[in-house]
Image 1 (cartoon, helix red, strand yellow):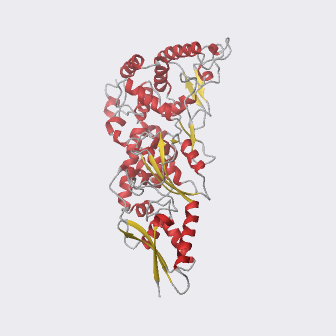
Image 2 (spheres, rainbow, N blue to C red; image 1 turned 180 degrees about the vertical axis):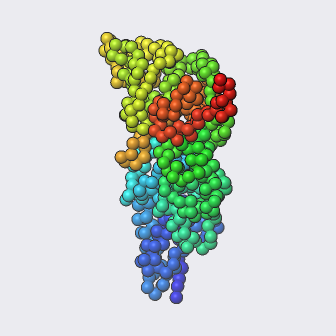
Image 3 (spheres, rainbow, N blue to C red; image 1 turned 120 degrees about the vertical axis):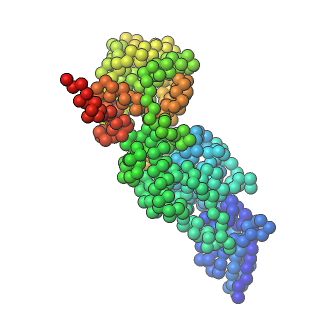
Length: 496
């Protein structure tokens, strides 16, 4: 003999937004372990009810109610649900990066971020991770959290994906969905799928992190061929927009190559806007006149012309990367007597590769812009030092400072012990300078290719280019921009 008692779900699990939450299965496991025969959720007039099936010869209805409320209170205290407001996202890919970072944090059961709504749906186990740790992880990525919103207002669909399916942790994804299906009296509605860029990015991250095509295909409910096709497509687009050496169309076809570029891929995803990708952009080589004209426009339009012009020219004149430029100090450019260090170096702690390499300051235009900018710094007393050395500037201060005297913010990210860093402000500054310069087709990759092309024109070989740009393998240099090889006919033409 079996009786049934129905309770409003919101009274038993007040923090749970609806019946698809993993806490339903946790509650079921607890109550069935205490002797109830069956626990599931049913709908009545659009409201979820918790249905408790029990043997009335062994337990009374009041006791069943007490058991359910006690178990629900314990689970509600342990598993927190929040709708966090996130500041600092620039594009939909930022949402993917945040989800990816948080799902690797032990104790985070679910993280689903909406770029459009600037919000994140979050469930975490308070016995394994604190809210503070989650906020700190977000801050380490360069984002900030506003004051938390109420858990559930009835106006925000916790489960509705806005930019593709949400990424969930290993604890909360497939296992949670299978458990929910066993609990529900009817099949839950499937997540909205579709051939979205956001989902392709999630597939790429999953493969880069070690997943095979087969396992990723199973997780997303698509074929292995579809996963391979979509990962190749998004990897090539990422290469074109973000300028990742070695990740061209051939390299992107191999999982091994993807994983070799894991760090570069994860960093590039932060500011990746796939809508801007295209072959005409990735193949863009800038002529010297274009660069000079862009510099003139930047000087005319910028509120800080010498600072911005020096930043712009430094990118083209040295082959240094934006993060490396953000790390440069006055002593890297000036000698103690105030003269320019023509033969300097990108120190190991400055280089992205953590290996020192030569750095040459031999551009008249760059010298002129930097000289004016450093004079402005001295007048504004930003990063000043002894009067008789380094033109009166502190040699250990950053080469580029904001009007308030602060260098570009560099943020570490990744797991503990990993040396990964990101400088979002300087990337945003360069995007702004390209706009000021009227260079709408310019990307990080086109700048690198332009530097390589100009070096080749002057007779550099692949070893020279690799040394200047900090690329250790010749194959990676060739993939960035293959050196022009004349035909046999051209070689023999008018040989005598």
